[in-house]
Image (cartoon, rainbow, N blue to C red; front, side, top):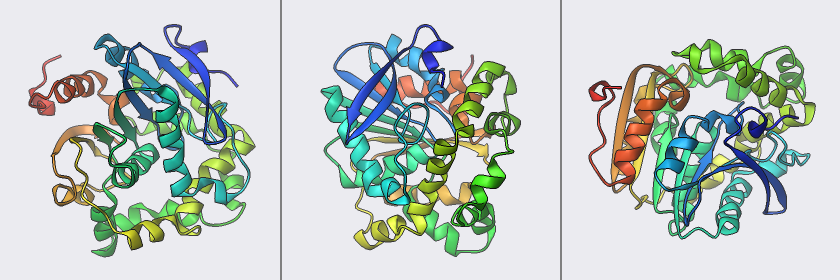
Length: 305
């Protein structure tokens, strides 16, 4: 299938071997300071198209891999290959392969779920963490057990536990149109990007791999094992960016995050969807600039573009 570099000519797409997987990695910029961008479901590394050139202009080397089962990255068969522990090993192996001296993880959706756990289990591997629209697992589990709002919003996670039926139904759903349809700024999702999302999610091996993330999380016991291990406090400076019009995750699931992160800031984006980094890229980039420079991160409505 096509690559990000087929659409955005300033991006190089390379192959990186890590944890026994050939990862398709979009790259921009040079140097020993790495920003590792982890995308979500049912997306593609092109989701970081607004952040990559900006971060490169700040002097960072940016890697945006397609996670296992996405894009042209290997998609091993079987739910066991998508266990949360294995996904964390992927991140560790990618960081090792980069030979970077400083590492910032920037993550959204499923990438952010991996990143939260990675920051807890590999505390010395990263220097800073930026999370987009996924709650820390401890407040999320609390939100799931208090009332029905978040449980109702997470219905699809339970549906994905079924064999074969999710794959059959999702064959007729356009991933790109689903993403653009829920966006607050639809002009930021041109047809060629939507088509790449569709191409990515339409391949049978990719479609099953994407759903296997959810199956491994629940049926595979990944979430339970992490809960049994506990949630050690994250020590690295952490910034959470949250689009308030997220239809899958409630704002209440962000409450109490500061109890689990030593150095924590959160910024809410009024009127912005789950795909915050694509909906409000200039504001996100301004916040990233301040955070990486160890300056006060501006509020969304205070940023004048």
